[in-house]
Image: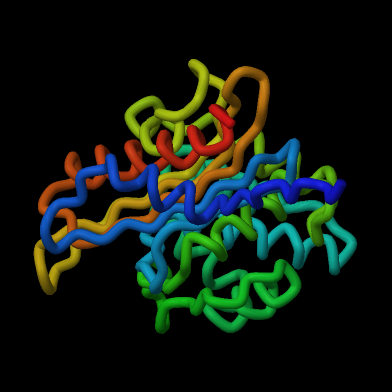
Length: 247
């Protein structure tokens, strides 16, 4: 008797079907990527590049930590102060200082090549918030921050994870909507574009649901208001996690 072929599961297809339940306002765009840490399975919905806004701050700190590793040193007290303000409070002046330290877009690109990011391009000059990226690349970055197979040392990963788990109270939205209670570590980005008046709203991080960890990146643009964008990325994150959490 011939063995019965088992149907293959298409995570991307499942996510695309699930995303049909998410309302996307006219003119807005959303892309989301998710990784089930335990199984190693991932899924991505949407394509194209998005402005990073402040989620690039995770990439900037990862780059700084990698440079410090290469130089065989710890971060200076000043760098640590900037890093804390940049991640926990999303402080822009601290970010600009560290953007200069890493060598701006060129330095980011050199680190991203080692991290495995293939579709991220740093913003011109000091415009780090206009760095272009994809949800898939942000998922790759999250694997560098939260995974063991990383160019970052365990100490560097632990440090960055700790900052992402202590985000300021008024910034605890986004992918955390998919988590059980406070079991999350994240960084959000929000930027009203002066040319259109529309909002870029992004969220990346790790969430824990029923004892399982998921890495999630939700990116959006063209939102009429910040609140609409927050609702969109939260809905996308919850749907993305549900594809694996309910499997």
